[in-house]
Length: 133
Image 1: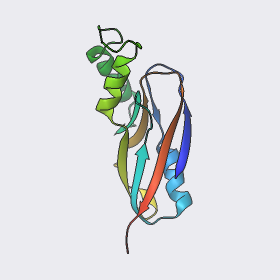
Image 2: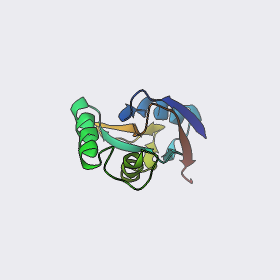
Image 3: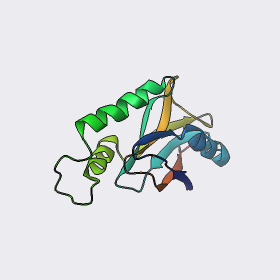
């Protein structure tokens, strides 16, 4: 298992971690299998989205902020209830197929770490599951 340490700089931000995950796949020399990316936090997550146009990430974050504002009378008193909701919707994990020793992502796809309660020091765990021969 690989542990990626991510240092976020803003309360809400998306960080492209595709290269870090691809390096892990390459280093493990697994030709075919599944790559599990998991975030062990309740106010962050991972997702796959477009990487060609940065406005897509901006639109996603601003839409989540409008839909789930930071202060909206939530019952959870720590002040980060919106972060818990956003991370639940984005999800704490994802699976990507690996084939030929490479991630099988679409042309415009990237893997993003989604921070909703930063800035913080975070972890992202990556595990490769090799296919049976």
